[in-house]
Length: 283
Image (cartoon, rainbow, N blue to C red; front, side, top):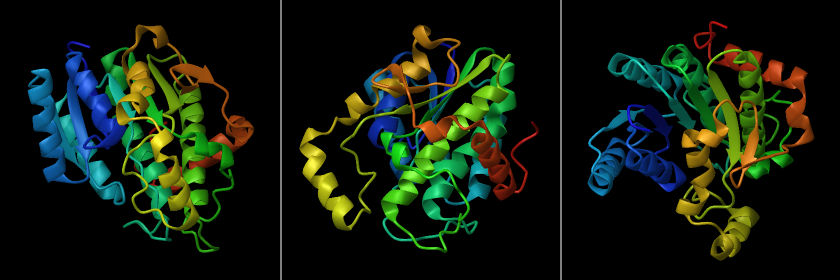
């Protein structure tokens, strides 16, 4: 990975931090995109110390506010002329209905709209780089997701797990549509299920989901184990040129039947463009 530039979102903890650390250990220039500057700086310093690689940089954006995503993309493009790997890792689980700064249901905004916007803002840079990869962390929970996306403010009722599952299905649909649009280019797009991982992502969970999550914790993967498929898709020569696939355990898998609906893929893309005010995409 020497000479390559990797941008990792949600890189101050969990599998994002582990993936960023390993990419830095491989010699890449790694840019951590985090919400909290203090935590991000602590992670950056720790990575430099553990790897001996001084090329670990920091950007700050709150994925609940799309203007900060735009600003982070602008800052990245001002610092770097290439982007070899974009690892869309940041995600949340929200137990109670909350809205983003832009007025969208928070889970959908953070888990789908923000990476959709960020990816599109950086695609020209990636295409100018050469062989580049977009890797998006979804979840096996997408199997329970609905592909309707007709209530982006969650005004018809809210369920935390349903919102999370819908957002993770959106990740897969987005990946497949992006991959189709990237055919015959030098950029690939793939997504993944990291496995059940012991991280703080569900710290906000309540009720039955929190009980089940805590009961399952002893059986869950460590962040180091959960990051392996992200690292594999970001760096392995084995997946060079592989495009539009869903991975788990470092192997291509079949995603949910609804995720393969080309009409829904296109509809979600168009909706996402509209919700991002059309500022993201030229394609």
